[in-house]
Length: 154
Image (cartoon, rainbow, N blue to C red; front, side, top):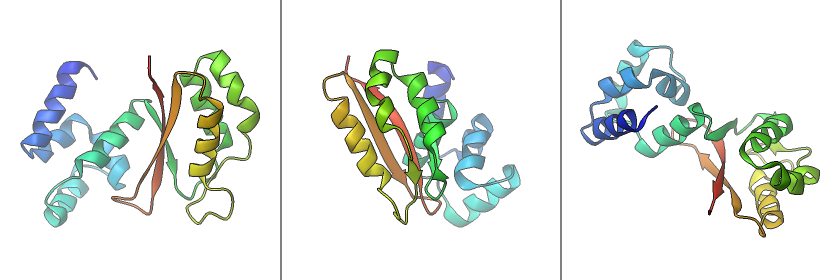
């Protein structure tokens, strides 16, 4: 979406015009709230009265490919994480991480090393670069999903 559309979304949120917001980004709401269309969204609004803006923007960024959405109980996410980081990081930076990017698990029950600890380890490896990996957990509308993104300080 362009800057004008982004500004329009922000205005609709500020004015709590959720129906129009849904019309502009139904794919975000359907994914975020696990809905199948406008009627289910209207049912949701009847019960909840409003939409969490922070959750919306996290799902929105993921829908645009700016972050990677991982279900909290997805299990092995190695290939997804590798593909996302390969796309988002320069080759030289990605190669610094490559040996650490195996057996990556998204499991909120944490039977294995928690994803948060893995991201900390990767960030230590990237400490001499301008890149940082950010992992956010969102449990606003579900048991939990992770959003992985890349930030560059340059």
